[in-house]
Length: 115
Ligand SMILES: [Cu+2]
Image (cartoon, rainbow, N blue to C red; front, side, top):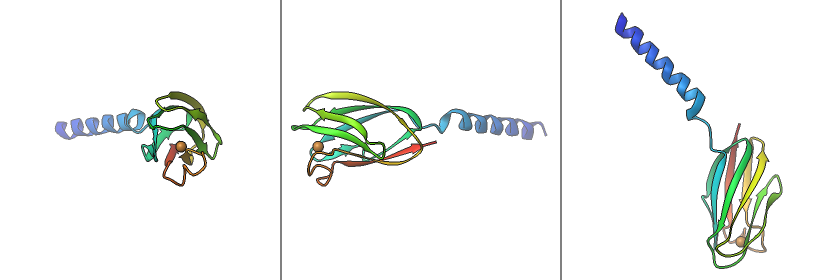
């Protein structure tokens, strides 16, 4: 009887821990731009204030736009890193480099904002 009770207590503690901390997505994300990709290709963050640290690892200029909120970084020179803090509601968004031809060439990435 006592063993069963201990197991039940341990199980409830695990449940509480999972509910409190384990399932939250991060509020910061690192993004790397290059020819012709945005890494990571899929990204999940927590709704609210999110900070993106965006690095241009390519050899030409790029930009960074969060489609759906139309916010972003206007221009990143090669080897430049900039940060952007935006408030995001839960949903699906697309990260792109909006310079002519760049999205089509592969500079696109899926952003999921979880509530
Ligand atoms: Cu680009």
